[in-house]
Amino acid sequence: MGLTTGETLIAGECKFQQSLVGYNALSKLERHVNQLRRTPNNGSERVAEYALFSRSGFKQSVTEAAAKRDDFRLFTVEDVVTALSA
Image (cartoon, rainbow, N blue to C red):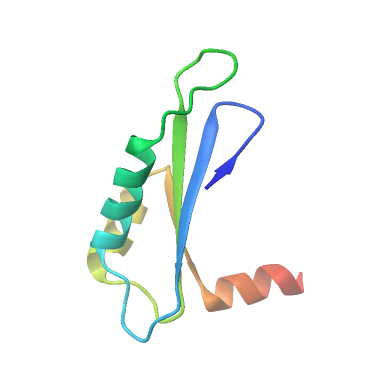
């Protein structure tokens, strides 16, 4: 979990496993965020954004969800290496 200076909460999870990450990883992350009792300092509505990182990739259900949502992003090992090399 990470907090921004505004109302956005960034929640992510890294999976270093040999199997593809499924939709259940996102569901679990969303449940954890819903249990948090953080309210932005300015009293506005909290905004959550989600990220999943995977060593082995993602199941189709997850990639389809990420394609439809603005608040959810997927990152592979290659994405991270490329970002760090820039």
